[in-house]
Image 1 (cartoon, rainbow, N blue to C red):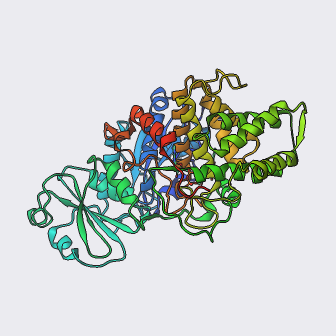
Image 2 (image 1 turned 45 degrees about the vertical axis):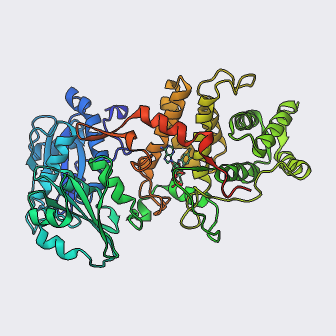
Length: 531
Ligand code: FAD
């Protein structure tokens, strides 16, 4: 058995079962299970694995009600258990109701190897097949509510929002949104049917699906959603004020989260700065450079060899591409000229710090002498801050590189369409204080950075990579409840970036590119709160 041939790895958002874990996992469980028994030599199973992974990602937040798993019957240690569970063909899909007894061998579902949308709907049906006694512990009610149950709630105060999705009887959107919000506190989602005329009358609903929101203070409104799609409904509810993802327990968080939290600076005593999520703030970019130059790099006593080269390239990149042409650019240009004029192979880092401080004193060229987070503020100390600003800085640089194609001419980076990513990769690998983050980023770069051949692709690659990190970290220790990690940009920032294909959320990359160019472009940079 060759481990590189495994179809599923620990990084996939599903449970990999084995002969010893199958029964303890799927029986006596508080959630239901949908298990694919596959064989790693079966061609169809190999082809289908990408769909199964995409499905598992799509329903990751449903896990407490229904979890997705795989078991490889081609592994010798699993031969007996596959026989015991009567697996004759691959793939075989079996589901196990919540609270099944140990003797349960699962119910075969034929035809699960279909498109994501139909398997997802099957999962909803599996849940609704539970009796009251078997009902998964954390699964909210999925049956429709009637006007008799809903109308008395109007005008009542509560400690949470109640969202009512009114839809046609055959629609799955309401049930899918209920399950999408399973991991979130502060909102309860209910569904009601378009056939409930007293409800439609009272709420003045005429189109389906619609979403009606009961606020904690007793007020209630019909919510406007740009597109009547599951993703839009779920995103909207997840971003209501006070709605929060329930954090995973600290024991299940990866060690890199711990590292990340430790890396971030303390800024709890700072006053809150109101800001607009559709803007980028130069105060965040300045603070990123301040932290990078005065804290992160200052832990290195000397720079030489590859480290010195990376530092020089980073300074060149910022000097040439930093938008606005203000004092930060002047400082970086001075630093760049000084570094290039040095005949030394090795410089003490104190010399860089002296230059930064002297330059500021003599010419007034200024790099904020303190951290001042705005769009990167965290709701408490240790959240967001520097890593947020570093992502933002590199997104801005990719967009600037695209907007000013000749800016890097006559530098060591001339002619490289992925210059920003190449410098970022080397910087993160060598200097970024969160080592685990660096290892993840390096693995992603090694896997696909070569495919980036244009400055447009450079913008998209970084956006895509950042979203991969967001997905991995959603609900982890470093997730700020006020800024939960989610696919970005949200529908409220860019509705045209989102579409649905065969019932599955997809990005409209052309519109994403347009959005990124505008969002991270020089004209969207706000000087508010800058010194
Ligand atoms: P961030 O993810 O830092 O995002 C900052 C801002 O960028 C957001 O507020 C939003 O406005 C915008 N944004 C969000 N998504 C995108 C996108 N897809 N494209 C463009 N803009 C976007 N932490 C770990 O625990 N483990 C890791 O492996 C890890 N790897 C990292 C790798 C790198 C290169 C960096 C810079 C950071 C890494 N971090 C990692 C830190 C983590 O990604 C966050 O930066 C940190 O937790 C702060 O999160 P945040 O809520 O401020 O949002």
